Image: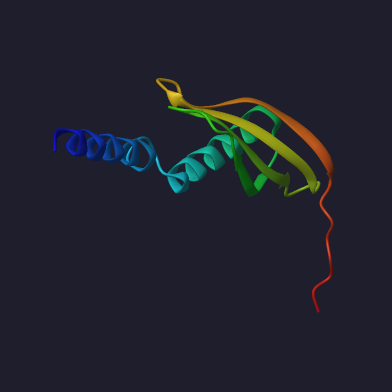
Amino acid sequence: MYKIVIKLLLVLGVVFLMTGCGEDKKEITEKANEAAINYLKEEKDIVFKPESIEFTSAIGGGTVSVNGYDKTTLEKYNVYVNYGDEKGYWVSGYSTGEEVETKEVN
């Protein structure tokens, strides 16, 4: 009986750690998008439009790549946002890419 209780507690602990700890992806996405938008606006005077986000796998925090484009020039940007410690959300860097393709809508 004792072994069953220990195994059950271990399983519940792992499930709790995987689902209950930290912020959920929706909240991280919102805060990372906001950090990327604010950084590019303040530092580079770029009006950034986030399109997607990619998560790294890290325990207790990590880095996300916020992918989007400049609304004015349509140039693509990848903004790297760190999160998970006392600093909150902060931009560690960014890279640029090609222009976004535009299509006429009839």
